[in-house]
Image 1: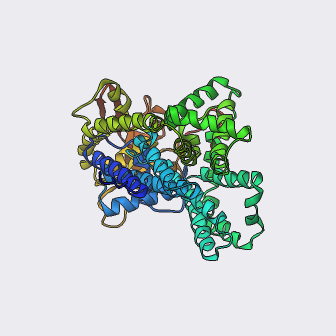
Image 2 (image 1 turned 30 degrees about the vertical axis):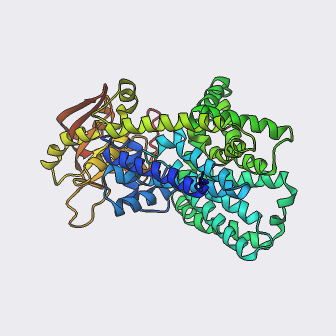
Length: 510
């Protein structure tokens, strides 16, 4: 019998990654799901490229600007960076697995990542976590290769450059990239053999590049009262009830869904082995990057609250850790099948629902996805009202409404002052407490100077506090859209004669 030639692991990894990426891009092109308000807001940021935004650094806006420039402003193009960046993450993890053991371990790391349920979900939306994870995986790979290149000058300079760029871009994706610095510090603390890098002046290239890339964002924050940094403090929410074991248990339970039940159980087992001094050097390196975000966010959940995705940076190196365990000599093949197989089945089923939406809308999926419907129908109701008032600016009461209508009425509306000959109507937001709480309130707050007569779109149940700030108030319409059991309502008003901002109950105008 002729010998059956085995397919090289790199080709297998590429086949898995490219195959699922192409399927996800096709699913995005086919789906009828609309943009969520946050996605629409990121798109609006991409229309005014900058070095920073109120809630996030700028990389997400840059990514959307790139994909929409190459494609169009359709929903699929707005979201296209997500499956592409997850593919890049998977291949970086292939490289890390190969560097720590061999190409076979790298292949399983890539396959595990690209089939994770959370990756299947986040590949079909645009979010700041996705570019963060790509930068994180690349930084973990580059730092490991730089540590292994002490005697190879060319290799060290190459990988140190990649590490510095990855760290800098990661910080421009989300400040959670700072956990990678903590991970490297933890690794060096526990691994004397790699501490040489602290004494080698060549290593200064890494923080120098990261700082240079981050510097424009720091300058933007300094010019805007450090808005993004302040938003991080608001998210921490440590001013309310402290100490919640229930929230901590809920958060840890959610991590089984984020990383998958079997991989998370293996991760927990290898953590125990590490604490007992039984982890290999490769496992210790991977755990050093995985533990800081998981530990910090678990404490945050105990102190107050934490979203399931806040510790997501734990999982790129954790995926390689699980792949190393799955490919240990003598490990039964069934472990790999039971780890990846259910993930693949769940991901393909989810993709099928997304691609067929709304022609096929299972009840449970309909309830979960209802937030991604309705704005296009609402925009169709608003459009004729705008067409009858083409000379008037538009005032909004809410960030999510403003973002969604800026996107679905992008031929009629524009954020802030339009360029000459644009033909679109400028949109402003009413900052009720005169304290910016989102990017629109920071840059596009209405103060009366933008026009005394406006079309006001309100999604407040009772917009009287805003209406009372105008001398003239004429109702135009009450609009409503119900989609899959979820309703969106707007009232439309013609207002004029701005009286000034709301005076709060304390009598102090803020």
